[in-house]
Image 1 (cartoon, rainbow, N blue to C red):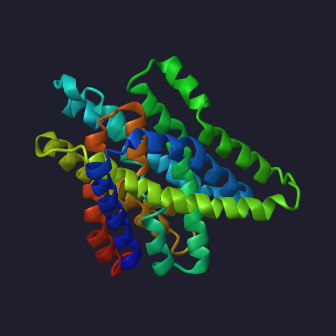
Image 2 (cartoon, rainbow, N blue to C red; image 1 turned 90 degrees about the vertical axis):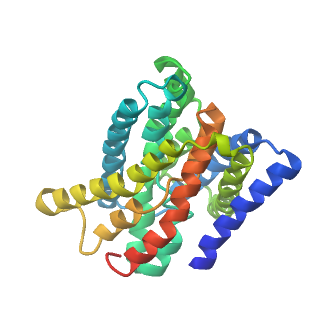
Length: 308
């Protein structure tokens, strides 16, 4: 597990060195990842997964937490930077980035180590709730930072990953049978794109950090990003688990660990891709992802001995 997490930091370092030596553009790589690699991975993963209707309560719970956290972060950031014209759009970044934890490339290694096979499968399914948030509300907020409401909706409808998710779910739940040769091909594409995206996502953080100078560091942004990530996210998870225990009963025995793990993951590397794509404080975003990633490892290490 620690080797896998250490590799993430190595990739960030390689991206940083590459930026300093070659001046490679983070925007160009981010465009390829967002508009070609990500939709291929999403479509393949959804079409080839065995989904049961009741299991969708898990991603629904995660989606509820993400939306509630998004609203809260939006209003907190609006208050914090209401008098700072340079950071007037920080509310969009915080509301979109903080709920979108790095449950995949960071969380899955911990889930493999700590969870049973069944709980691991449910964890991966629950990640769909965060993906739905990221590909709809999250993407809209990134676009909204520099566009009107109608333009943001149009941009969302032009986003390939949105349609990859929608079509993949339609095929899966309607039991639409594709040609036999298509399934091994899709499985291979999914594995390849997951590998490319995991490397590219970390690498692009390093590329974005390559442009950062000491004078660019906004400590207020970093402190609040970490507070919202590691205090507010777990608080919302605790509240939702309590509501489920009292009223919903959607989580089985031990399945609350899915939310505990997600709540303690750092801000997802995808935030850097979107921030670069829409020029929404990309340097601040890279530092937010980096600092939360550095903090998450010891936090999850302690949690694995207690609540996970």
